[in-house]
Length: 589
Image 1 (cartoon, rainbow, N blue to C red):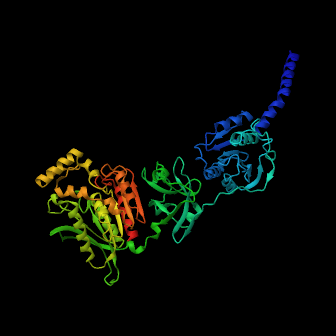
Image 2: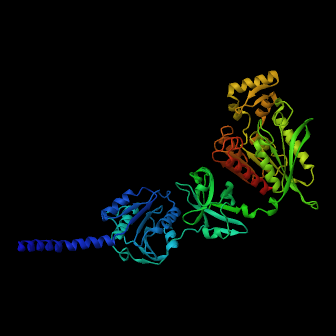
């Protein structure tokens, strides 16, 4: 019995002795093997297949989403970003190679933290080289490190050279020294896109991030940005240009993260790479506004919260209701002006004339009141009026037409300009819906700035036909007005109106888009993305028509309908509309 046991032990020992070298070899190989990371501007699956032919046990990760086609800068940024958490020995293969088959070198970069990057030396390696430092660079010796029988192929080095070499390096089949001859410790650098900060203004480039998520990254580092001492909640005025032409302009809050703004709204934040970035909460900013990246895409930012002159927020104000003469009748107006110190005889304050919408009032559910008060606190006077048949007007709505409304706008402006301390060289015009149409039509009348909310700005009456029930209903109403002096109409909000014949004639003959084309001052076009009355194609046409303006700010409020939160108790939306308008006008007058 004892001998049998001994024999069994002996057989087991022999088996272990036989298997031990194999086990040790496997363990040694496992310890030497490193992860292999693949990135490309195509799927890369064929490269993974090549790597598995080298070692079927390799841990291979194929980066997603894909790098945009031929975008070497995106490849460089991706390598620098994605390598930050991987351990020494990890091998990255990057194939974004528009110059494949040319004289550019095929290399392996070893960084000072022990990572390996296999790539064409075409700028793709500048990101990791700058981020982690260069330990050494070797040129791939294709007589050794190339798939067999591929010498005939000159257009797919990612398959034939890079993934093959990377897999051999990751699997421990070759050492770094066996990659090929040592080169000088440098790689081709991409043109540096840097930012600057001077006297409150950041000047930089859109440097990247315009891919799947569309969060655009700016060439402003966290260190540079924080040197200006920003505070969370500060509002930044942002202008993005492509080859000098303004593409997008708006005001953005600086916040910690996406959840601090309403769904669909824009934000300014520091991304996980430590770069200042702009995004839409759960949206694609680059796609939404047509933003690209590179040296042709410049950006300027100014902290409006820091740079607002203190004097613009310290005025007390007075609000005066009055009746003034226009067209031989009296029209109700509200004039709001800053109160100056009794010994201040030199100050002159700008003026904003405000025009309400079709069937609205000079208060517009408190929205116009809040704009007027916000302006007054910043040292700007305003005047707003009730059009015929609206608010406190005693006229019939049958007199409500563009001809009469334009005359009332002029009368209110002339009245305000006669008041003490008003500066006749700084006048702005602000209109909501139909009032926005009036603002566009009045753009040639000595106004320096124009702001609009959901401007009903199409030429002619075509865009208004739907709100009047369609073509047949429109023609019936027009015929009745011509025949009987007015046509009764009930709006979608339950308002009973009398549309006079002049209303139809004026609408059909008016061309607000043509009027705004020659206006050179700043223009604000603000509207909601859920507006079914003045749709985005109408407001978009206004933005396009303002082609001579030196500055067009197109501000879209997510989730806002035509009333901009004023008539359905959505304070976040109405606050956005009011604050954006006050800031726009006060900064430009």
